Image 1: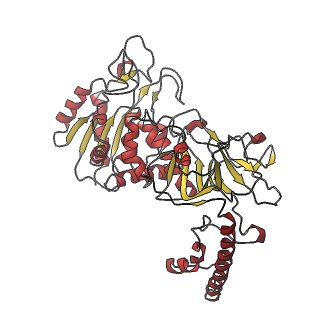
Image 2 (image 1 turned 90 degrees about the horizontal axis):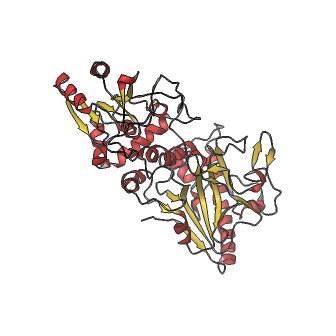
Image 3 (image 1 turned 90 degrees about the vertical axis):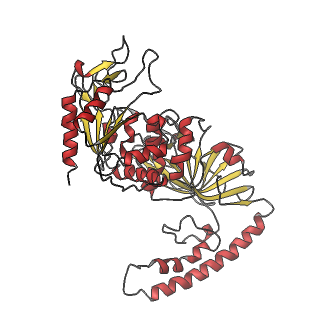
Length: 488
């Protein structure tokens, strides 16, 4: 159940509310002046006023006379008296603020915006009677006064990875609604999933992971965040897993469908104190993503949130070695002419080799899709060496404990693509895994025709339709290296 902190205002109460707000604002201002004067008198020896937590809460308590002010943690000083009783929209962004067309990677927080249920648009409110101020500073176009070129109403941020769902508010010529409106005080996020319904890798580390990354990047947090999904929430087994184990790591509230959610308030305008949009990161190899430099802490913190919500210690360290080999026996992308997709061809041989070569180390072969998500986390935290094919199945690696090793199968590059040249050994998720800094990665390289086998006759795609033949001598070299590096 989603718990909402909101206010509703009808047209019959608007005038009375305005007078009440005026009296309350004067009272708050008076108390605020007294509090600030007291603080200044006790702090004359320093230009920078430093508060203990108790002093801070006492000094700014006037800000909550009516409700939590959305600008409590930003500079908020009155200068224009005519704006005291107005709610006006504001926003701040990270990303390109000098190229209006670079909207796909932009991330923004909007304050005091409203969705008009009749028009189906979000609106941004300027101060009434004020000269229009620039919204954006484009290097080529100069100062812009709308959120996109020619006020096209979209393309200021993207609600989905790779820019597949452009979004932007409309500048309103009217003031913030004074009647028939609901104000929502919690932080809200508006997204649209792209691959999450079919791929847990994309769902964890892009679609849903981006919500966690965005809050950290903008330094804005709310345990009662409401995640609004644009369009119907996919009814898949994977989304059931997200609802049970992943979304609760972000918020106490369930994900909601945007249209159903805003309709539930029964007012023409649904207004948001804080709305975070954009910032949907693509983290896997694409033409524009070669590495994920600087994102290590974002990935690690998101990993830790998921582990902690599942009831485990993100810093847990196993006290004995355990080796897990992934049996990729299931894939949505398996060709109808094949019974496997990017797997380990000689899996049985690998299993027996490990048991015979390392008899004092426990080991097991796991089909991850047969194990509940929480149990997967538990097993991974007790693993010191994970041996896995490439592809989405390898994206469980971030859940390994600190200092663990992952041996990941490469693929043979037959056609230049994804940043690799023909004849090279390609690391499929390298652009992401290279930045999971608490785990040591070893790439089992694939050098030629003897190192792979096509998954079915007639194909020539060594990236998508070939599986790895593991050489035991080379595998032992990598396992021994892992054991050596985990020596105390």
